[in-house]
Structures are given as C-alpha cells and as structure tokens.
Image 1 (tube, one colour):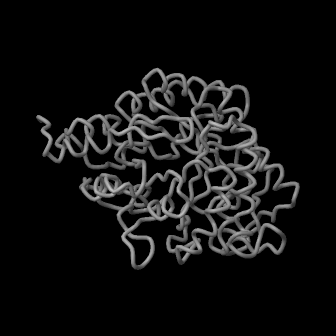
Image 2 (cartoon, one colour):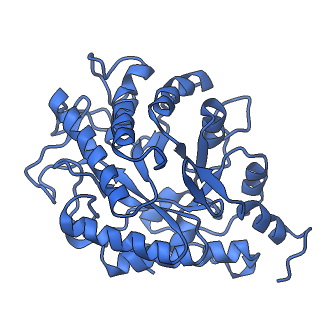
Image 3 (cartoon, one colour):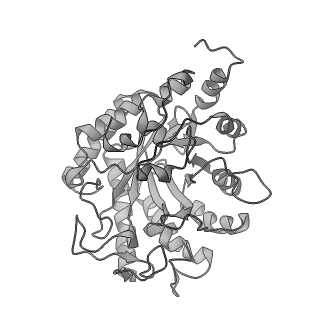
Length: 376
C-alpha cells in the first residue's frame, strides 16, 4: 500500500511514530507492549525463548515493552513457579539477557514489578509455606481469606522488596520500572476501600489508602537514578469485581493520584478494559486522559486496542475480531494521552506494530486465544 499524506494509513504512521520522553527515557514511538502474564519461566527464570519473544516485538517497532508481571523478592509475592521473578541470581541473569536482546533489536524495556497480595492461594509455589497477606486480610470479593492483615514489618519488607527490584532493574540494564498497582493485587488492595479496612495510617480516606503505594514509589525513587523512569499502573476495576471504582469523580481521582505523582511517578499506566469508554459523566476523556489532565504526567492508555471484544474473554478461550484504530488516533492527536499499550493484538502478531506503522492494515489478523499457549 502506498502511503500518501491524506490516507488513513499515513495518518496512523504520522501520529504513532512520534517519539515521547518519559523522564530521561526517549521512546521512539507511541506504541507500548502491555504486560501479559505468560508463565513460560520455569523456576521463575526467563529463558532464551522469553528473550526472543520480547525482542521480536521490539524489532518490529514496539517503542516500549512492559514485561509480564514479575514477582518481587517477598515470599508471599506470588503463587506460580512458572511466573518470572525479579530477584535471585539466576532469575536476574535471565532478565539481563532479555534487556540485552530488546536493546539490540532497537527497543526500550521496563519490568513490571508485582506482588499479588490476597489473591495468593494457600500452599502455592514458589514458597508454599508463605501466607497470603493484604491490608486487612480480605479477598477482592470482600470475604475473609486464609491470609493475614499486614503488620508494619510486613509493609516495610514489601516496600523494601520493590525498591530492591527497581535497583536491580537499573543495574542489569533496564530502561525504567513499572509498579503494578492495578487489578486487585496487593498495591491496589491498599488503594481500594473494598479491601482496605485498616484504622491506622494506611487506611481511611482515599489519601490515607494511597500511603502504601506512595511509600513504595518514594523508596523506588530513592534507590534509582533521578532520570530512571518510574511508571505506576493502576485501574478502577479488579479481578472478580469489574464494576469496582477507586474514584467516582475526578476530584476523588485527583486525591489518589496527587500523592503518587509527588512521590516520584513519571508516568501513569491507566488500565481499562475498553480504552474508548469515557471515565466520568460529562466528559469524553478516558481514564488515561483524566490522569494526564489531573497530574500533568505522561499517561499510557490500554484496553482492547485494535480489537473488538473484551480482553477478559481471552482467558475463556474466546477470540476477538479486528477493531478500528480511528478513535485511538483521534485521542492521540488531541494529546489526551501519550502512549498506547497493546495487548492481545501483539500477542497474536509480533509484527503488529510494524504493520500498523507501515499502513499494512490488511495484513492484521483477528485475535485467536490459541496465542496464549505459545511464545510466538
């Protein structure tokens, strides 16, 4: 297809190909790879297949890769021995090779640092003896789990684990870090009133509930270089609670985001299930758009980009047809947000970014859930 100035393909290339700066990091274009748990790292060690998986997407034009969630160095952080860990000599050596291959392919990469909190089930690996922990010992559905409410020592230990992982990321050559504060996992369990019933300084009003997350950001910021980007991912919705909301109004959202921005977040990754839906009544802005407006920080949008169908269905074996990018491009052109994270479309096709930037839309394929079973 020949690109001329007035073709939709040329418009897509022009808008998506603009570089953007996050603190000291220049991302060559507006396309990011969304974090997607893959469980292809036995023993928590990412191998050569994981490195090639990310490098293929970098070579095909993805500007910024956010890795799958990686467990920080706390015994209760995870529940699968096939999810990669961001601690341990062998694990970090594996991640160093991932970063090296992505850079060789021309991309930028940040690890997503993760603690699942009360989502953890008893007796699961890699540390079966470790209990689930959370702000109040409550699961996302509000029921009491088999875990424990965190003590101050627990809180300090987890904050330290995030800081140590961030320091390791910079040391082994990553371009920044993303803190996973979304989807009902540990950091989000503190942010959300549904799971945070604490009566100490970490519970109460929205600002108090933000304290744990802000202290993680502060510790990370103090551990890494001033120009090392820190991204914070958050969401309104939770696993098993898709209608949950941290904030009902822009004012409530501002109260939550302001302490995080002040603590040192350079960019927010605002996770939604459908990026095109407005977040609050009376405005067309989505969650990322409101985030940028309220904080002045760079914002990353995500949610069914390039596809027509909710990503949750991917985990039930459902596919998804292709969707238009017109709405996305309109929003990017208005600078509603700065980057767009692509999930299933990039899972399906490692060349997705290359095809879109070149205007080869006719070569894009709908999502097939079989892509979950491979590291293509």
